[in-house]
Length: 116
Image (tube, rainbow, N blue to C red):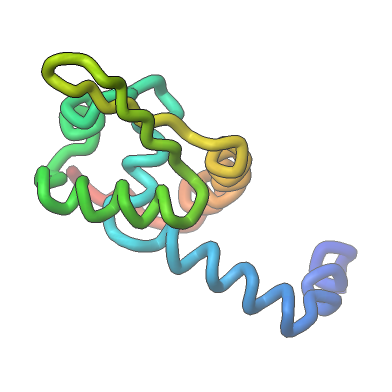
């Protein structure tokens, strides 16, 4: 058994539950795409919608509320006429997006292309 395999054996039940909670949020359809769009600099609803192919307006609104309530996204309402709303990743959201990189590398190694 190599060193990496031994590390896995030291993950306790509490850590597994915490990871499962994070994966549940990120694993919801569209969530990771929205986080990535925000990480790439999108701030407005329409910009996010444009960057995440196939995402509907309704589902974007739902996912943004979920990501905001999870502490991953900030929603800033600017009192202009008309009202302007900007979204951005929180520090927690940025950290989560960075932590998804190893999973992306895993997917490149082991998962077949999705064939867009």
